[in-house]
Amino acid sequence: MTKHAFETRMSHAGRAGTHVHGFVNPGVHRGSTVLFPNCEARREGGAKRYEQHMTYGTQGGPTHYALEDVISEIEGGTRTTIVGTGLAAVMVPLLAYLKSGDHCLMPDSVYGPARNLANTLMQGWGIETEFYPPAIGEAEMAALIRPNTKVVYTESPGSHTFELQDIPALARAAHARGCKVLMDNTWGIHTFQPFRHGVDVSIQALTKYVSGHSDIVLGSVCVNSEDDWQAVRSTASLLGQFASPDDVYLALRGVRTMALRLKHQFAASLDVASWFEAQPQVRAVLHPGLPSHPQHALFRRDFTGGASLFGVVFQPRYAIEDVFRFIDSLEFFGIGASWGGFESLAIPTTGFITRSTGTGDFGGPMARIHVGLEDVADLKADLAQGLARMG
Ligand SMILES: *Cc1c(COP(=O)(O)O)cnc(C)c1O
Image 1: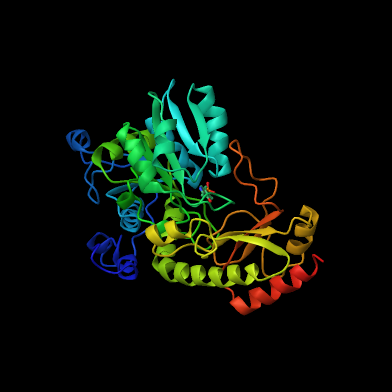
Image 2: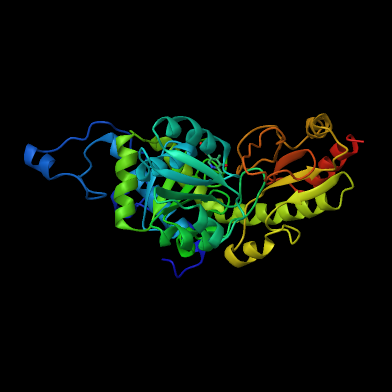
């Protein structure tokens, strides 16, 4: 299917066809017990999909398989495993490739709960994590890799601060020393094709644009080789990872409109982001799609579009309380976590940013903006009245 346009593929991927009597959408298959006609059939049971060869509910069923196929299509990989949350999708491959005595490299701009996992449970299990400046190149990465480094973790752009990473360069350094390259590709989704840029394992919080409706939490781990599939799938299974078929069904439903939502929201976010840049209260806007972004050239090189989440840095004369006043006065921007849904959101990010390499200070208090599907003129008018209250 890869020769067809993304919109076409998102309409046709993951259909169950004759297995559901011709209905366009797969059914919601719930279950723990899977019955066999006899013991021999059970002994033979196992791998075959869409047949009577499922063995137990935790292995997933037809609803899961449909979404797995769609995510593989979105990311350009071969196989995908669906897990309960985006954070579980971060955890599963880390634990698949790291054991006691190993070293892991993570960008300093990594999603906060991934940092917490590395600094608590992983550390307790004897896995050392070192945080590196996100914008480093191949030679700097090569210098950080030790004999016991097994994973180079990446996320581009970084959470809250939106630094891009030169993934092909980092992957070259990692692969030269036998390290796996993991990437949290939630912001890029299909606009960054991880496996074309040297990534081994791609992580998605399906909670975001795939769901698109802010009503589920779900994650996926996609790979592009049989070895990686065995490593990731067995770890997910060992950890008892499972997602409700109802949530999986909602994610499949979200997929059907995702290409259009994302295209619209990316364009709307660029419109709002460049509007922010022109406001006197604003010092900088952190959106990889803006020409002012310090790594915009990487964005042009590696991405075919983008997401609708970006950062705003206010002038240093403002205190975080001024940012609170701005956000509190907004009518259309909800104050809450997550993103990728139909609704606009705004949160202050000052105080949420933990760093160990001295990156991430942009010289003023910060907020994170998510642009939803509301009319852009309405959003700008709302933001304008909010900024006016900052003084
Ligand atoms: C939200 C998010 C996650 C985690 O997803 P959940 O489903 O909320 O656990 C992981 N990575 C990034 C970049 C995210 O924004």
